[in-house]
Image 1 (cartoon, rainbow, N blue to C red):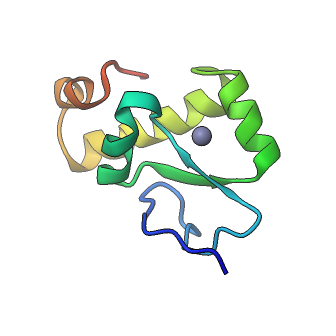
Image 2 (cartoon, rainbow, N blue to C red):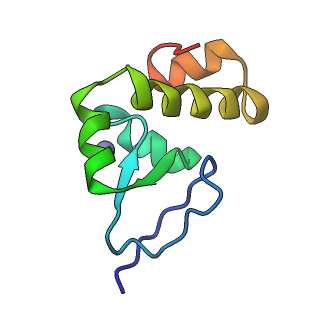
Image 3 (cartoon, rainbow, N blue to C red):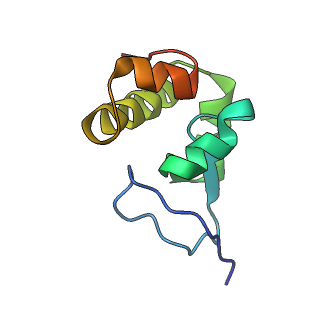
Length: 91
Ligand SMILES: [Zn+2]
């Protein structure tokens, strides 16, 4: 069984059984490490994962980013803090 050493704070059934799934960093690229730091990861099927990356900042991708930002603003700081960490606001 494949394991991962990351956690998600936005997906309830996220666990370390990643067989058949892809661990998606909600904020990719240069924000990848920051996504891991806060737990903004989501377990997706490969098909959905491909869609998320094909339509950045739209539909599912935007929904996940908004969910993560709402979580951040509830638990870590205000909008300016979020923008400092993730570059822009999605709400
Ligand atoms: Zn991804």
